[in-house]
Image (cartoon, rainbow, N blue to C red; front, side, top):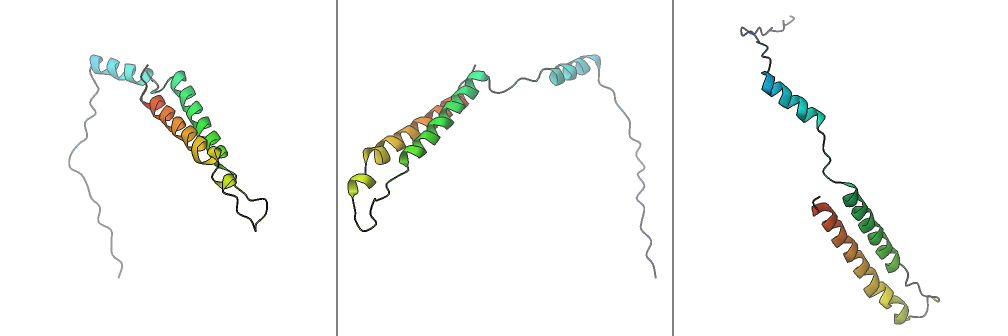
Length: 104
C-alpha cells in the first residue's frame, strides 16, 4: 500500500512591491558605501601588539639546566623570564585593546 504525498497549495497570491524612489536611492547608497570598521592605523597598532605578544613569549622561553643533575635557580628564575617577558606581553595586550577601541 503506497501512501501519496499531500500537496499543500497556497491560496494567497504573492504581490511584488517595488520600493519608492526615496527608498530605492537609500538602498543604492547603502550598497555602494562600504565603510571599513578599522583604518590603517588600527591595523598597524594590532600588528604591533601581536608582535609584542610574540616577543614576550620568546623572552619567557628558556630555563633549561646545563646538567640534569644540578639545580640552578638563577637560570629558571631570571629577570628575563619572570619579569621582562610578562611585562612585554601585557604591553602587547594593552596595545591590542587600544587598537580595537581607537576611533578615527
